[in-house]
Length: 193
View (cartoon, rainbow, N blue to C red):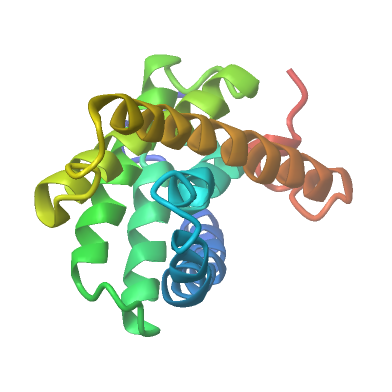
């Protein structure tokens, strides 16, 4: 089956699963934004980057399960929108974060022409989502600017690692376990290559 490009090959079931997963992940984003993030940030400037990768799962998980172009972008965008609508303290700017992080995740899968879904591809998807997150945090909020160049570099590296780590552990591994139950048999994750 040949994909028709971004969103061209998606079925109603693909979109419904993406939306369902994104609602759950968007609710998680709200909890992370309003409670977990602020609580951990009191531990110092390098503590938040440790968990930043959790915010990149909206694109990784649906894309890994459905394995079609456009899903990483759509998933992260919908999760961000749900987060805003359920009371994220950051407001509508979260949608910009979701769109750009979803696009960055999408680029990772695009680089492998949507044919590779291993640890490398999934980890890269999570890691690339860190780029717009770091850029927007710095440009919009001045985050990291009060840190020394070395601490800033460490924070950036930790954010990339966090993105890759959570994409692999919570994105790939959990999705693989879920697929092993048979519940995802109608999706490409269940096709053995």
